[in-house]
Length: 68
Image (cartoon, rainbow, N blue to C red; front, side, top):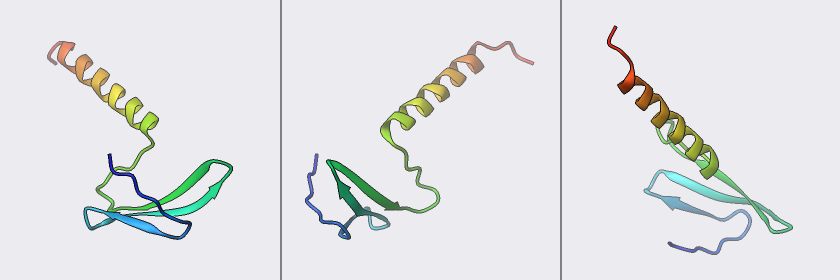
């Protein structure tokens, strides 16, 4: 894991085309702004896990379904 120190208004770049900007820091919370190409999905980790579980459940249902 890479740990970076940034101040409000500063940013870092991932893979040349994803920019993460520190928007605010307040009472132990950090707000980040993320600019990424439209084909890059950006989610919070809990949303990502729910999507992954839903897709896995859908795939299992499709494998178990009778052919039409």
